[in-house]
Length: 315
Image 1 (cartoon, rainbow, N blue to C red):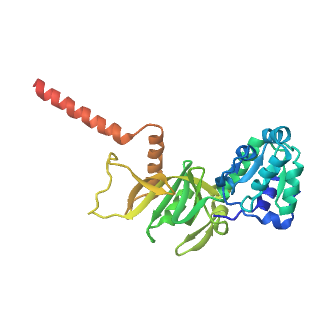
Image 2 (cartoon, one colour):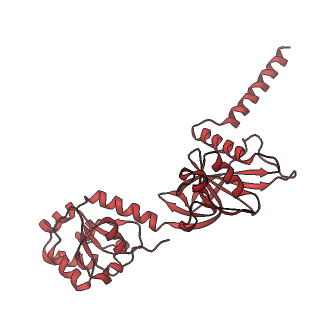
Image 3 (cartoon, rainbow, N blue to C red):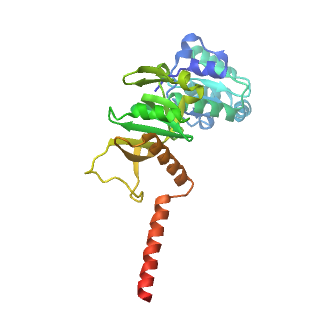
């Protein structure tokens, strides 16, 4: 999780400073949400909102101007400028109440204005904070974009993951991350990225580090992808029962509460792994479109059995 300050937001969205010295802009923003203070302006002060960035829109500004006296304003603004609250942003370039300016100056509390309308300001801030404050973890493996699908490929060291990824790149697919995948929980999905230092590079045993973008073109690399399929490479064992038809109960990998379809793929000498992975991704895309080859095959077998039984009864 990255650290976000009021200064970061103000610079990102070009807010105009009304009140606040440099020290005030170092206030941390810890919650990826905003607060439109309708209840607070009406005199109700819920503690749960104090850590959110306060957005004052056109409706709130009119309510303050037309319905609130000085005592009510000062009581509300004293609460809204607490130590836990990052800042206040007034949208639509509405005028900032003098009582708010007075209290903010006394507390060195940051107050800004913006030309952007209220709903757009909220969307901009929440989307940005959602990404910057997202939960994250590091996963050992490869992340590829194959036929437009973000595919996480994992397996124990020495399984040939990097070599398989390179074969897929040569076939026109994109590499996102080699060996280390930074996984973020953003907008209810899982986004995989490569650390900036490693972007576009792969490590090949016996050769060393290679620059994929220079060898195979800039289109061979993508900075991020939503992880939608997890392929686990395992050494082939005769004693293990592998999924051969596809009608068995599906397995899922759960990361940050998000479930991703998981498939175990046995690796052995001579198996064309890049082609097998392409097939797994194509089959996944068919299932997403309501086409399940395994179930269709099962239904065909059942129909044939019933047909054979009817022929036996007739005989």
